[in-house]
Length: 222
Image 1: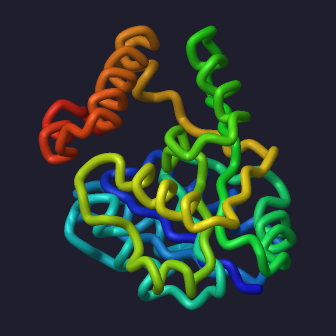
Image 2 (image 1 turned 135 degrees about the vertical axis):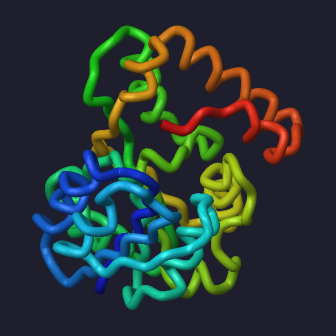
């Protein structure tokens, strides 16, 4: 089975090469689709050496929907631009989706910086709970399932959790033991305590039904 890896980007010249390299080191067949949201740095130039580059309006949901619709794989894996796939990840995805009863899934996560708070967050990704299936874990889905559901809801924040909830309720959602390695740059920049507090506050308000349009105004992207 061919896996398409869709990576949304915006001014990621310092991270995108390592991310794409973590995909390119995997077993084929795969294709890599970078969907840029209007970068003003060298993101597009760097990505073109490794991947097919598309452009779309800025917004992860918009960019990822554009990417999977233009991709060619039987399976689509969505990967953040600052997240690295573990060794053998695509083979593991193919293996679990060889079971016709499995439609989608995600990895655990580890950060590239250690702190007690981040270690707790990483440990929590062992739990089989869709409401903590954030995009930095890497979400993979059968193409036919994406076509049936219509892809990500086009909201500015927590689009990853919304799609994960839909997929989990549908059935056939797999929680892999392997860990994607994601950047802790936001925690480093803002301080782990402040960033974790902000994330939890926004997440709880989302669970309580606050409009993601409102929450997005309070969330700082790197």
